[in-house]
Length: 183
Figure 1 (cartoon, one colour):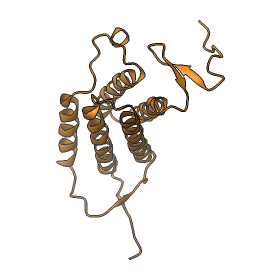
Figure 2: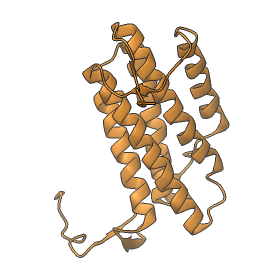
Figure 3: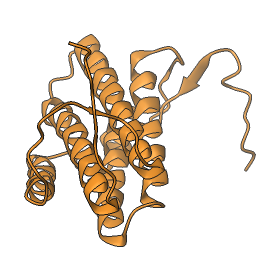
């Protein structure tokens, strides 16, 4: 199988269910942003301990499922693959609470950086926010009513990634960098 088909050269592509659309469509923007987020998480997995890596890889799998659903409305293509559920949100919230319990209360806004791994986590967090906005834009443009939980999941995921950044500061012994507003 050739990796290039030349079918997308004119700015159009096909979804998993065969539906054709412009590469500038909101749907493809959401798919691309989810894919980019997954790639950043994959890089972060390479830099963290096995326990955190395992949690991030579970999130990567959830993002693949979400991307598959955005890429197709066809039950034939999706099979029994279920969209993000409340269980997935609760799992993120439990992970957030577990990290938060290990950290001092936040007393100031934190600048991204301080260590390469922390910066990678911050980039993943910001890409997550963009992916959330892209997903919302597509959902609103197409009036899909079954993505409310997935949108909430993306919002909670960015919160979780922020807590991962704080946890990495703590576990690596790197002080958080306070933002100085100049006021």
